[in-house]
Image (cartoon, rainbow, N blue to C red; front, top):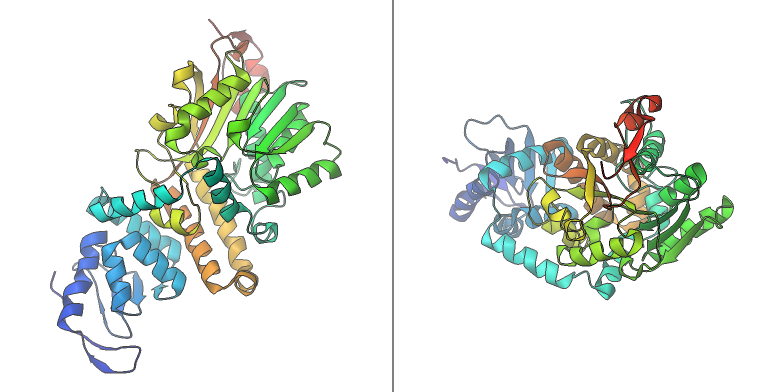
Length: 426
């Protein structure tokens, strides 16, 4: 790549030309991320861009240290530089990240040896043991309910919503998601449900209130459990819903249905067999189950920067990986759906609300915290838009489960069309 030697002013105020080192290093960024349509600028100087590409964004790095970190690990280098204010992006941040993801997928489809080493190092420090999981969950979910209340929906549902129409509000779409989960499980009054990883309790309360089931919901987040119990008390549902502050590995007691929404991401793949044994302990061969999780089309490590800064211990499994939870116990997979565009739209709503509360967030939690979470939300939107991330829902049942619907019309069409039920062993 031919790069000119433009003048620049460093942040100390000296005007000059790019040094030989800078002239050599800057193009290497494009070798790592591909021909992203951006101008790359060091300090206050002129910019360089990939040949034959019309730049749509300007990325300004404060100093050589920042440039070196980006060259060593583009993901963590950019993420930390953005968070610390050493990197600025002119242009729409989500659109920029989309362009980077798409370009990097072509330029570097497999992580470098250094990226793999960093990923393993992060994973070793964030192992999802009983103690480690509690620590990981606490660092993400127990930073204060008031923070999440600023940008989630009114029920504080922190998982993918389901938009029946493009004009649906976030509140409407989250209710529609919870109802879709219940319909997929064909919940019946009087049944018992175990939920692993219940967030702030919205789904458990929805199931009990609208479908007449009894729910035991488990979670290791103290803040979330406290909020969920208070909601149950206010809605007079404490007799139907029990919120248990404990790890999924300690779930006990039999139930008709097992539900996990947004929790599989916190289970290390090494523990999938153990997770499956918990499910089998609860529903045996006669029950029904549901897994809802962020995933990937191909097996790979979850974002190093997100695990470092936002979501310690997280992993987004491929479908093949996720099925390792179910296959050893002979569960029948009845339905798989990908709600990827719905999560992109959910995140757009979250980021919009986050933007409106950004001054309040910065004032209360600090500028670096606000920038890190903005990048996390923007990057997640880009991930779901480009297909780097997927959102899978799997419905499964035991080999001796009582019955199955003849069609899926009760999920998306006229319930009368699927009134005929057939034995599960047909």
